[in-house]
Length: 193
Image 1 (cartoon, rainbow, N blue to C red):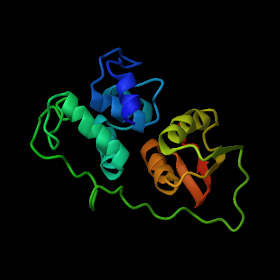
Image 2 (tube, rainbow, N blue to C red):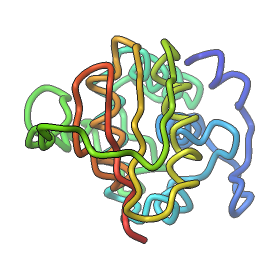
Image 3 (tube, helix red, strand yellow):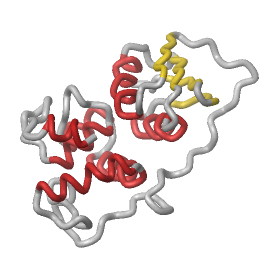
Image 4 (cartoon, one colour):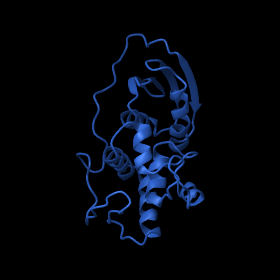
């Protein structure tokens, strides 16, 4: 994670060309936009959510994953902020304490379990991601989902130990529907446009 943040340090938003701070770079990495980082405002357009929703959803995920949390602390250090400070790039009104966008201790909100099909649905596409790690997996999953038509289904095989947490969280964030999950197999339906 830190290697990616260092490599992308000084990047500009691929949509509006605004300079990205370390926090916005981290949000882009978490959202799977490693090759096309975006500022929070442009990321909200891609994810079809308000800027605040994107910020809070991604922050909640960052707070629940130690590798991403270390990236957040690094960004605070690089910007001369104390560990618990709110960066003005994301919280312009400031404050002293980090928000807790979800119930619990930094955990993603609970999602009702995916529907279990007696026979899994016939997928429109399949991808065996093997043991690709969480960051790269989510980065590669995004273009695969975008290549599908709205409503089509991808059957994903993901052996990574973080997949049972990462894939449902990614689906909640992006709006794609996780229709069945039985690790290492996941059926994801592309969202309607």
